[in-house]
Image (cartoon, rainbow, N blue to C red; front, side, top):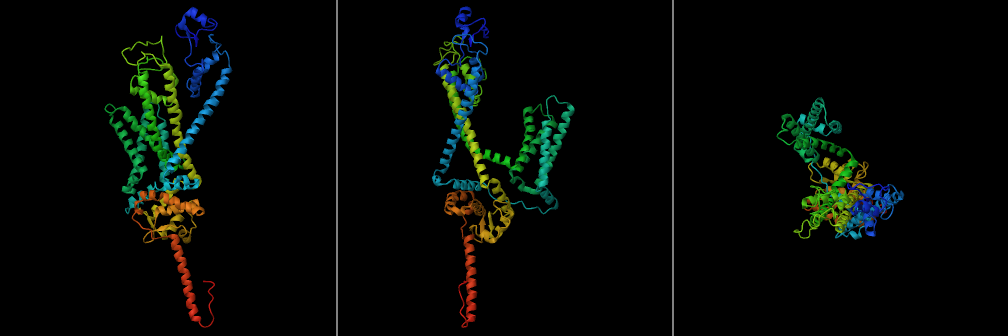
Length: 574
């Protein structure tokens, strides 16, 4: 930093040229060195580590540019060469090297994840294609057929049912939601009384529209209205909106905390989430996030454990440090709860260099003998060397490793979802299959007569469906059949997926995958446990063809008996 005056301001280099002159005129305390410097290799490493994390690098660069020599007073922009040095280092050290670190973390995370998933499942023997099959089959176990809502007999209820099932009605409600969002965006500070009245009536009108929508669906679907999670979500939103409106009309703001009222008003913004139902790309991203939640919770738990350990250590080492710099009455290490808040903030690496500078305070700016009765206390001074290792290691573990593991989990699940789409079958295809199945199995028995499978496949869209499918094509699928010629939904879906993925080239591999997933299927569909497979559609096809051959042979034999002893019959066509 160089020579400073009593107020800590840097003295102009024209007045003070070097350290000797500074000490002679202003005293030894006036010559100060920057805490982050390049005086030795260790200090230089700490300085560049701070620059690599983009925290405080501007101050370090300014000191480097103003530097004029050893024990010389800094000169403003003495050399512009450090600009190039820091520019190159940020590109190489931050943009390139740190991203390589992130890449290594993601790569090793994916490798260990696959090893863990494959353990005990013959995973080392699986090819990439088999893993894709297994991932697809796992998604099959997460969805089941739902009971179809039958149209009510009452004319008015049937009208409500038809309206609720109409695509035009959904589009209309979506447009209303978008208008509601635009109306909510108009709210602003210091609005006029007239504006507030107009906004209140607009909210009332939108609430009435949403209430009418919920009433129509409730009348049309009856008790089945609550079987769909989106309907439950809409119903809660409607109740919350009316609760907030009633509180406003009753003028209960003096009794109920106004912040609670604002929460109910903001809760209406959640209506925009209904658009997710109509946007496939957004649904995929949301599905990726939901699939990532278990792993994210595990990483979050580990991160909180690391934060807690560092907080306890921070209280022990920096609990008595003087309140100065970035340290305040709220942000310090005086207690565990405040340390937890501080370390949670530093987990994002935000301002960690300022906290490090605050705990590096040393005499004469502090009194090392202030707390002599406290064992291990260094007065209200900090610990320079320990602070560097403490905060440096925490940023490395919590920010550069743990936080980036969140990215690794989300990217891995998104990549898996993208691979399924590239494969030709994704979650939407499986959901559409169950929606069509519901039309043929309205009571959700999970079974369908084999004679109706052709109609089901014709109703489906590619890749699972085929509008030109024949009875022979259905029988060639090799679907297991249960008593009374019934086929189970999971077996039909398995057969259609295997046909799409082309398992005929590696039938042995496909059978191995089915065996690996058999236990998962039985756990997800308990009805399979009590049922016994009688035959398969392919075996039934063989039986039909054998019966046809026998019938032809029998007819020829009868003709042969009639023609005897005229001319012998040729059996070459039998």
